[in-house]
Length: 260
Image (cartoon, rainbow, N blue to C red; front, top):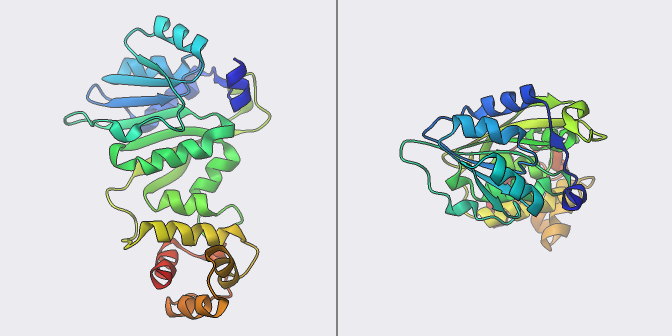
């Protein structure tokens, strides 16, 4: 329990919400589901009833033992969801690989990034996060919550905030609201990229100093001369005086191509 508190984890207790979360990905007997942070098993039982195979990743040893006793058909693994080998998952013949979870607030972003990096092994996800983080991931260009997390997730996935979850659905109730992201992995990135690493670097640099004009933020973040960045950004068809939060993924890709 101490590990759980340290990670900012709260146990889901509302079975109606648990069913609604599982309904988002609608597992079938042909599917493999990885559950992150099963806790006391509110989602685990529903997943075990509907999916062909369930692997549950739990960091807390006492909870691992309880889950193994309560759900003998589920493969309960003591593991850190930030570093687990998602890429090694094998898609069932004719089925899907799904990820469902109540992500600990304090490590939700690194877990999400690990899942996005392993996207070729995953088809669809339903992930509970702190509401502000979920809205940031799904944000469209032009708002203050739109940032690198939005761009680097939406480059590879369709993302939407599917459910909002009140504090009373958890034990103990958190001080913040939660939300569930429904994530569908795209077969190909939304934009064709010659150099994905450069694209990522450009996006992170642009939002690293988001109050600055785009050219200034990129020059500082990438260690390039300001005049070079201004010229390259203009060549990409993007005004260097704009701010990062106004750029679409297509525009970031155009800038990244010029700065490669």
